[in-house]
Amino acid sequence: MKTQDTTDKLAKVDQPGKPDRTRGSGAQTVYLQLRQAILELALEPGSPLDEVTLSEQFEMSRTPIREALVRLVAEGLAKTLPNRNTVVATIDFAQLPVYFEALTLMYRVTTRAAAINRRPEQMVTIRGFEAAYADAVERRDALDMIQANRDFHVAIAEAGGNSYFTALFTRLLDEGRRILRIYYQSFDDRLPHQYVDEHGSIVDAVEKGEANRADALAAEHAAQIVRQIQSYIARDTVSDITL
Amino acid sequence: MKTQDTTDKLAKVDQPGKPDRTRGSGAQTVYLQLRQAILELALEPGSPLDEVTLSEQFEMSRTPIREALVRLVAEGLAKTLPNRNTVVATIDFAQLPVYFEALTLMYRVTTRAAAINRRPEQMVTIRGFEAAYADAVERRDALDMIQANRDFHVAIAEAGGNSYFTALFTRLLDEGRRILRIYYQSFDDRLPHQYVDEHGSIVDAVEKGEANRADALAAEHAAQIVRQIQSYIARDTVSDITL
DNA sequence: CGTATTCAGTTTGTCGACAAACGAATTGAG
DNA sequence: CTCAATTCGTTTGTCGACAAACTGAATACG
Image (cartoon, rainbow over all chains, first blue to last red; front, side, top):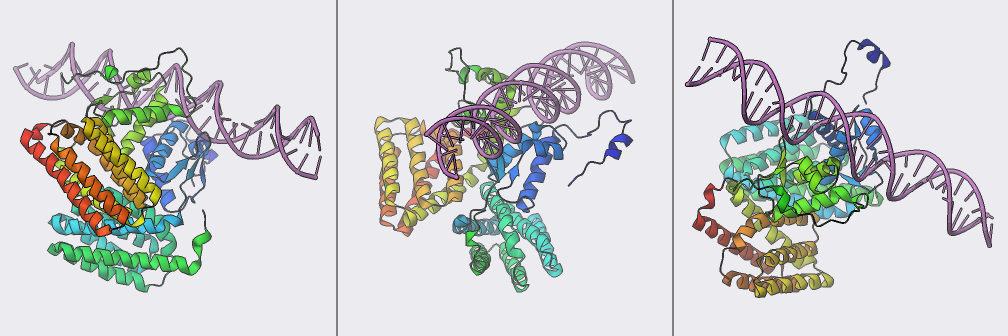
């Protein structure tokens, strides 16, 4: 993405040290960028993450690159073949039911907890992301929808106050972006509007502290999403994509 | 008493003059050993993980040490202070309620799933760990109790077939070893025997595929454990341990 | 006497280099 | 012409070195 221009080098002769990059930021930068690229499918599942190539692209040594890769592997977003190379983690469609099961439970648990533990200032944040989602739907911007939807539910989870649930939920939602991204490009506009309404109901239940209702609404919301993705998969026979 | 040197805590058994170790094993070895030491409280929470010291102890360069530390940090077992050093993660007793909440839910969910998805050969494994736990109770070996109890429930979780739940549950149980270890040294022998009975009931429900009963039993089992730990904490006013 | 500053000392973050391990291409035998 | 052994090239795993950033003590200044 960042192509080096030789004229730049010549123009910057008077600067002795070239890469002004704060000390601890190397690995962190690479980690965040790679992570983003993987979740956005800019890096396809299975594509190799070559250390020397990356070190050239990011204009730094292999060491910070390596640290970023180790972190990604620990997070499950990449996989290292010993003595060989590291590749972007593949999406295993056979594990989708299990993924949906976990996702649904986390939807329910975090929303229920939020209804019990929410504080006023957290509701402001939640409402902000709710509006952002509605706005993205209005503009039919699928990417912003995904982002705002994620932020909305993560905010609810944080209001729930259980960091273990929040962590798992966040990971599930982020991992889901790789699936959702396919999904969100292929449906009509009716569903996002329905989700906006469902978000409204959830916020209402959370704010009023109605835990059981919040739980039920979250369950239905999750079921709605799962149903749509499943129908899309069934429709297009993506089953043989063994990425 | 706070000035413990990590040297004696990680006694190196390796002596013969050949530092030949298979290529990819360096970082992995350090990671596993440090992880074990942290979970066993051989490395106290808050104690520093100095890279050069560790590299001397393990007789290897700082690079594999560093990779191990990065992994531990990613897993939440250590924390890096930028440009300073890395320390063993502290146990935050204020987060205990949240921990118990997550632990209880995972007990329930994994046991329920096992009752639905278990296969015969998995029951064999489960019964094996069940016996191992009973045996450890018989021998009054607290360490083996912790280990067998963990293996028992992880085996059940694996029979449940949801890798997301298994992963979170495993992490919770392992993290819990740091707490359980204190706990298991301080109670009378009555409770472990009760746990043996509860394990028996759970296995029975799982084997018969009675999901609701398995769920309820797991919930009660978890509540029992939580109750005991809480009473222990209340009894000894450990509240000011700000590790 | 208290506060700000300077000056070591220590530990990390990053670098370039080298050799092991593995896959692919090449060669040789049947 | 097929298949096995060998060589070659590429990528990783590990190493030692160096400079930056932070800590804490010692010092100067009000």
